[in-house]
Amino acid sequence: MLNHITIMGRLTRDPELRRTGSGVAVASFRVAVDRDFVSKDGGERKADFIDCVAWRQTGEFISKYFAKGRMIVVDGRLEMRDWTDKDGNKRTSAEVVVANAYFGDSRRDSDGSSYSGNSSYAGNNNYGGNSGYSAPAPGYGSYSAPASAPASDFAMLEDDDAQLPF
Figure (cartoon, rainbow, N blue to C red):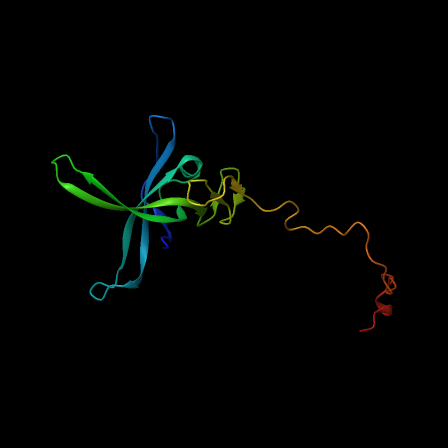
């Protein structure tokens, strides 16, 4: 069976970070996700408001780096949760249990530097996510020549344009 969901939208409020009785971090937040179509009557685009919950390091990451209005991309699983309200009525809620969270936009820091929307955190939520911050591999974006380059039949040209064959 497959239960996988990925959504992208804006946070409707700052994430709320709490701790369980045993000290496990859990962050709750709501994401406003625009629909792909415009309604016939008013021409306005509607949005769905989706509740999300992130546990442990993923929850701490989201509460630290995301705030109201920020674009977030989350993936995880959809869970239905039964609960009883204060009047004793049985209720059911759907929420996304977040396995991974990604920046959906870029932000300028106060010092003028920025970070791109490619940063992510793949938390270990017993959902198959990797533990730790997902960062580019060492040497990413740069080239280093192999220790022993193979011999070449090409001769080096001087910096004189007259020697170029074109």
